[in-house]
Amino acid sequence: MKPEQEKILIEQCHKDAAAFGQVFDIWYKPVFGYIMRRTGDYDLSKDIAAETFLKAFLKINTFQWKGISISSWLYRIATNELNQYYRRNKYMPQSLQQLLENPQMEKLLHYAADDEREVMEKELKAHNDYNLIRINLLKLDIKYQEVIALRYFEQKSINEIGLILDKNEGTIKSLLSRGLEKLSNMI
Image (cartoon, rainbow, N blue to C red; front, side, top):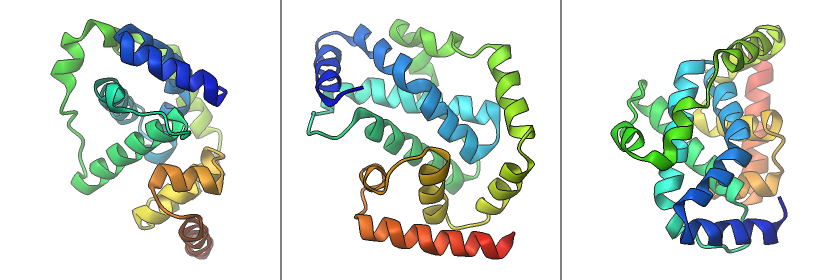
């Protein structure tokens, strides 16, 4: 989506909560995929993705267009939710009741079909190398997991990763280099 289109979409969301459905339609699958590749757990990923989009929905009126993509904002929320999960080592969505009560977010509850689950699980199982890397990736510090996952699983640029993680490009490059070195020593 072009920046000017994103700006218009954000303005629409500020005026009409129902416009958030477009944000959901455009970015749910990529954000869910990022979470799924980080956790390797379908049900957990659905919970974290739902919480990510609920938080985005609740905070969309505070999002001010400053030339930063809304996808970077969504990935930042997802990354924070993942970090929260890993810190707690369990995940309890805090806003589930709000989700159930909010008719605008009903789409989140009905989005996942069994077919989607089977496709994602088969895709993960088909990539043994991916699973080996993911298992070893989980052994790294979270700071390395984040940059490696965003760079190689999500194909984000160094600049985009910097925006998502709120770190400068030099730090991102350094974390990538050290993380990849640590990962290669494990395999």
